[in-house]
Amino acid sequence: MHRLSPALLWCLLFGNAVIGFGVLMVPGALNDISHNLGVSISAAGGLITAGSILMCLSAPVFASVLGTYDRRKLLALVMLWYGVMHAVCLVMPDYEHILWFRVIAMLAPAIFTPQAAACIGQLAEPQARGRAITFIFLGWSISSVFGMPIAAWLSEVYGWRSVFALLSVLSLISAAWVWGVLPDKIAPPVMTLAAWRETFNSKPLVLTLLVTVISASGQFFLTAYFAPYFKLTLLTTPDELSLLLGWFGACGLFGNVMLSRHVDRFGADKAVTFSLLLISISMVCWTFGSNFYSALLVMTPWGLGMFACNSAQQARLVHIEPKLSAGSVALNTSSIYLGQAVGSAGGGWLIAHGRMDQLHWFAFGGVLLAIATSLLAAHATRRFRKFL
Image 1 (cartoon, rainbow, N blue to C red):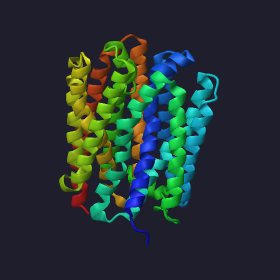
Image 2 (image 1 turned 90 degrees about the vertical axis):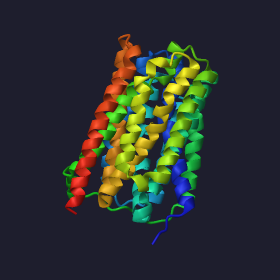
Image 3 (image 1 turned 30 degrees about the vertical axis):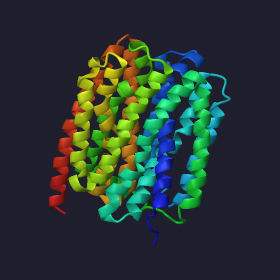
Image 4 (image 1 turned 120 degrees about the vertical axis):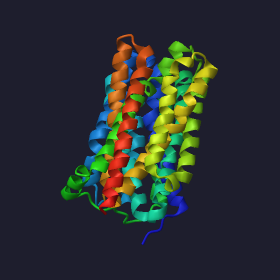
């Protein structure tokens, strides 16, 4: 029987960090992508929307199709694909070609994050499962700390292609690390048609997944357009934009570390709701961030809650039904990306119609609805456990 080693945890954490960097780098580099390729901000945001739609649709499909495939080979090949496809983007001549290769590159996040979590769900002891899953999900927080600000700074100074090149190198390093650390013959339970039916018939699981969709939709009305928003409203320099995004990510990392330490004690349900409340505070106070320093302050609660919420949602799903975790976590990944697609498309529409100053109110509405849904999901979970 394979054991869950620290090396394996750190390897998957790094993989998630690289995956997260690839997802988050486009919002950070959006200003230069728009300028260099001669397209509008809302059109450049299509890189986010199109990739999110693909990830949303493909994650649950891969959970079934790749069910018996050895995870060492799978995760290594996925990271290799991620690196090569983004390297191809470097030599593409225009926005349309870059869009196509960026979209097919985003098959990697649809596979890596849910399958890494499913591996942890199989290898970890039940009492340590929540902490292990939230630990490897720290990679997303780390990518927010370093990835978004690095992408913003590099793109403003050296151009967006330098960001894509960096991602390619990191992806190849991750592929080699996965190949060297993961043992052979790790294959979480296959998601059969009956298992998918059981997942969709589970009220606690469905409500929990709805929390992810609604929360991500609300947040990405604004998150997807941080770079152009701050440049337009605060006239930020490249250094200031990087500091803003870095602070936001640092808060995310701190919040996720705190969650990883305490989620098994307080419960994932409460952690999700508390994280969403923190996010809502920032959105209510958003207009008070009228200069660089006040913006740092206003972003703090949101940063503390954003990745903590995502990590707690992963742990929440695994705790509800461990045997369905391969499918439910894949669906949660789809839910995140569906939310990103809805939010970035909605935010792009608002910007195209001159309503950038209203982005935070749409975000706030989404988060409020997510809080209400989270409370319903917690109630459904308690009722479900009474009948076990």
